[in-house]
Image 1 (tube, rainbow, N blue to C red):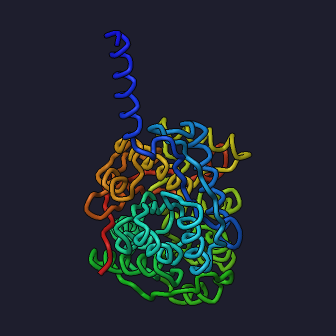
Image 2 (cartoon, rainbow, N blue to C red; image 1 turned 180 degrees about the vertical axis):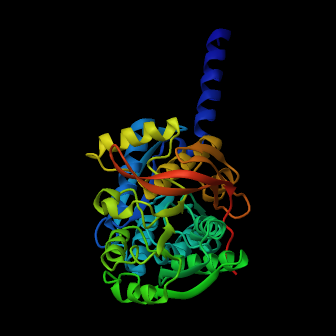
Length: 391
């Protein structure tokens, strides 16, 4: 055989052997099952999440580390854990997704956790905020926030700023109970007095009986947590029943003053102090660019904290796939996510390698009238704040 010819044949054989031993995942799309409420009482959460995921893909393309990303959106309605679990099972078994994501409320995240564990599929919790969620599966990582994380700074700020007595008022489910426990613990530790602790059913449009009790109790302030979407009703009824005129201040977690709802809440939000990890008015250049792109792509809709949890969930997935060179095996992706840090539109964030939960800055904000409406304007912050958990 001609020596040159022999070298070509051998070279081709080596090349073919190399191709045949390359990972099968290199040419396969990576499927992400996105489960959020697109209908029902919490549809605003799903709308924000879907918009943020679409924006991320528009800005970054749909391919990373040789893998084309295919997002499969599922509407769970936001209220029935059994529906969420069934959708997660179908996405894993039938659609062969390699990642689950979204999860608007805590009971829904709890329902999907065993599916992630059994299938060894990473589960990016973008929204649900009860402290213990990552403990439900070693495959859960969270890019949103926890209620204890954003509540503790509010309790500490209140005690330092002339508020001596408080009534706490929360929605009666996991995050609300977390918020109540942490606020009571930190506020009383700093010398404050809790006059009463009230809990309302999760979906409760009539808050007036609870607010009547608050008015009669005459605290310095009312601390409120209700999930995103319920804040407008609380603010309206707080104003209508004259609690502000009676000298009772309203303080809250940022869920109450959801950026998505601020245009509809309007002037009744002015002066309310809240604590949260994101505001559309956050002054960083990255956030200004994000808000402009988001509002332009969504007919003027403001991005809220759910949008940022989703946007950063995609950021984290992108970074993990780059680290694994496109390998989407669950244990490898989760390992790549642990300890990852990046500059989010909300500020610096990282994933705690021990808890798989997010570490971030929590801001104290005051609702103020601006050129484009009422915004939550940050005036204080606690940096690199981890979930303090609950006892």
